[in-house]
Image (cartoon, rainbow over all chains, first blue to last red):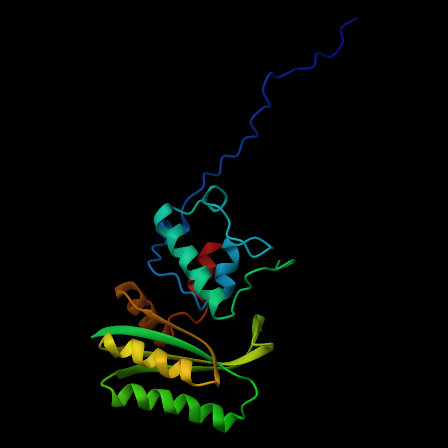
Length: 88
Length: 119
């Protein structure tokens, strides 16, 4: 009886994700991140209001520092919350 | 002369006129002490992301100006002495920030190209 042979992997197969992450600031030539633009900064924080890591957003280190600075300024002037529950 | 930008949040308890008067007080303070105001932007009454001094809204006002560095501490001292100011933030602008603000003022961001591209 030729049973359908199941392929078993020793390690979990890599789900092919061809989309390479890139730094959107480098790609689009954005040099300054505006802390007053809360809607834009919303892309870099999770629903709790915490900063997303670089490994998820793909931002380069140089701009991650600037994103962090902008988010912190936006929080100070009450445009973004320090803590939230369901931001998105 | 370095270029700066300052955002102040005033208590929502003020009437429009008093809020305007307060803002005028700071802008005249700046000009009298050798600063050159580049632009002012009144955002009006905005909702805060979290309560500040138990208030959930505030009058936002932004002033962009050129001033000698020693003036900043004096300006912030004025802010601290004025109880109508709930929060303030003063930042020094670098050349990219100045370019960005100029672009924004000239209305190049009508559709906000920055956010568009990011999608």
